[in-house]
Length: 407
Picture 1 (cartoon, rainbow, N blue to C red):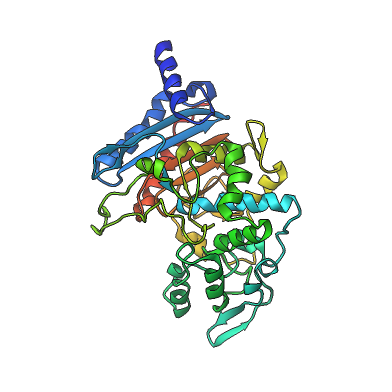
Picture 2: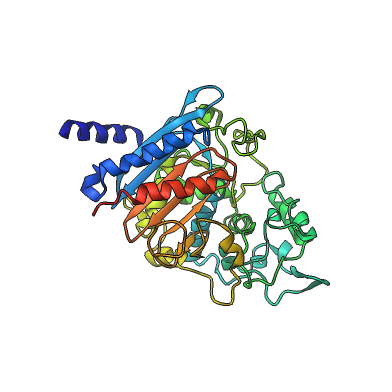
């Protein structure tokens, strides 16, 4: 048994970023029950529901599980490596928020400031009504951008003419200047602060950061977060030297049979999309998530202050905010919302296990992470599955990990 444990730790150490590795039992997790994570992942792959996955789990600051499954490229028969690079889509949002909060700590921006203070193109946006438009009672603030209460709702969130107009906004295909010019011609969907609705707010926030720092967003995040944390494979593009590690989806959507593929990751887009343009690995992202669990610090490197992280991961939605749209996500019902992350309000209600105060977010391409401060637990799940099955996978990985806690 001791030899098996030694080999396990050696294998983890050889593959993972520099988190300290330990046996699961040393931090209150059952190795036997943890094997159910592997069983679940292999089952989903054998059913043809996803091409492959990488899962990283840490508890009490120690890495206890780091495994890859299935295929990096199913069509080519390429096995999934642990250092596979994934398009993390909306898991970009928490990193952009941390970047903005670091500027907040330096008094270079304030969360109650209107976004138009930094981006004059959108300084006087109006609000859509059934009869046309009306003046905004107040302009969207940076806090609104982070918590999705600004009114810059994604175009795919509805069928109205305004939603169709918002669908023409395309961070990345448009430059920042082009994006802001197009946005400035549209009204907000609702009065700022009145409704939670998933949005382009973090794309706007990324442009605020560029305006404040006079840097491209990726350069700022690299200097402020990625380099200090040792996140060497996280960026807004995949260099040609690493493209052989880029994870691809199944050629056809398992549910619809329609073709699915990702755009070329090696081309730098016109704009670093703060809402969903980054690429990363499980080993990189668990370092970012562990920094949040550890109140802003990892391995002696401080990214944010403790109170800042506590604020980011507190529920930001007061009773005046309509949260009906928040209830449309199966793994978020029962959650509130912080700054770029969903925050669990109680032990029950939600259709997934968890602890009050745990927080998470995910990406449309299948990736997911969560942090449970009460259990001192951090989990990163990566797969290339840009389809509706991602909601299923989030529930599968949550129950498979939490049932293994044994203390």
